[in-house]
Image (cartoon, rainbow, N blue to C red):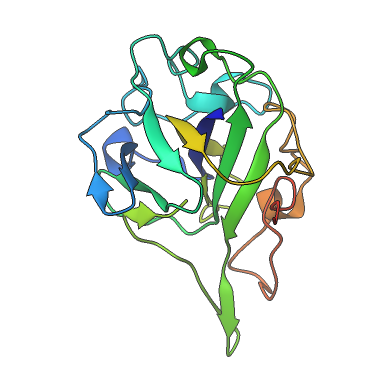
Length: 208
């Protein structure tokens, strides 16, 4: 099954571009590939996508074509890891999505159905929230540290060919754009005021 596997970061910060990060490397099992090997290269450096209605939410600016991107082979059950160029430091959730290509994954623009396979949200202890901020995720990173700022997504897509496994139909699925709403509580959360619980934006993660 040839799929796009997407990791994204959403920041509510209005910050200098040099302070952002890019998910630019992929790992499968114990193997870590080179920069932009099997990952679609974006054309906006580490600048964000800011529109909830933009097709760039799928694979970032310049990433909706994979004609020049190679495809990694992944056996069902293998771990897949996204690595960023610098550790994620904006507070917010991390999510991983996949979308099956109807034909060649290199020709696929991500306009089909997407399903989420994992979320990393905050843990709460003693009235304090702790976020999983690092530079690798067996993984969308949504930074919500600046309530009231313009939401910013940082997105990368890897092309993978998954072999083996079963014949499950992932559910729920969603279209991107469309999976995230401006009214989602996880999108509008204020982490500095009475922050005691959190729901990650987007559909629930599919479980086999």
